[in-house]
Image 1 (cartoon, rainbow, N blue to C red):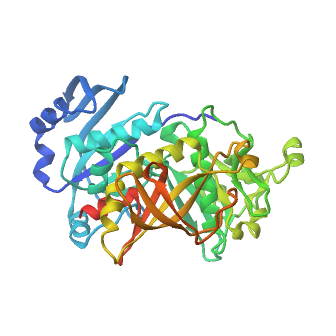
Image 2: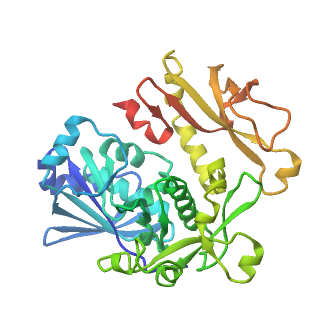
Image 3: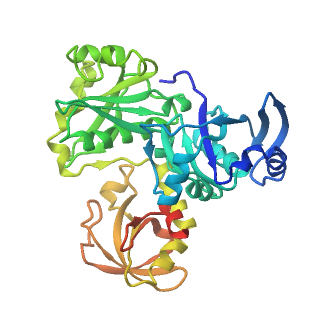
Length: 413
């Protein structure tokens, strides 16, 4: 179900406030940018408008100075040091970058980061107002200069609102800029909201990855449960969905006077084909007990390919980390599944191994850390030699934290 596309709003906070008035420098950097071509530009009442070509498609964007006040409820997507936190708290202005995404939403998002990095190379943070998210300036720089787009999770944020009773209302921000409905789950609890969070995140990615837009009440496969059954979700316009809940529920009509009353839908499930055939959907809480048993949430082929490309682009960080005995490196490898499963659109099972050592620039030896579901003849603790090209993800466990390809900016600090 396509919805009215909203503009994507971001605000970059400079390290040097003087960069806000360096209009000549901004134009010069735009003119010499390598990733896109400026076709025309203009400036009206302090706003720079550009029309550009990126990957053979035309976009337009606006830049302008904007007064800044640190938002109270924004989610922090990255780690900031104390110096940067203090600088953000003192900041009172930034450069806003606004644009409409086209149907290639990941390219559009990536382009917006590239524009920000071009006009403001040195930045403390970027506030994604559409997703109500704060991103580290050095993460934005690394993402902008990458050949691989960031993860779809950056397109939106899932927020949790709770009340004194412990009831929790989950809802997203940011999907509307991709012409996709925002998503919600009502009647969650402190015991179940983390699992419901995984449901809403996976559902959002499925809607974003779909080659053709899903319609309201369409079945959407998002996970395989531990009992072997499929988790089939769907979404229902919030106004109709509220009829399925008590009037005073958190997230009900009384909580929507100032927002969440347009282009948003509640996630439900079809527990069986009979339910779907009869048009009966039920809250996802019907699966709460079985969802505790580690369901396999779906990754699309496109997202798996993106993760593999990013892991490969930044594999040097894992190679360097492995030289430090205090670090532990895990590598995810795509193993060919047995024929019974490969014919069922599951050619590979992606599974974690513990690195023993990199043999050379093409291979490594590693130990399997978990029992495969769909590959026979290999078991937890088995070791083998594998090719770097088979790596689809990695994690570095340092004494301080875990670092993934997406978090590699931390290793450059």
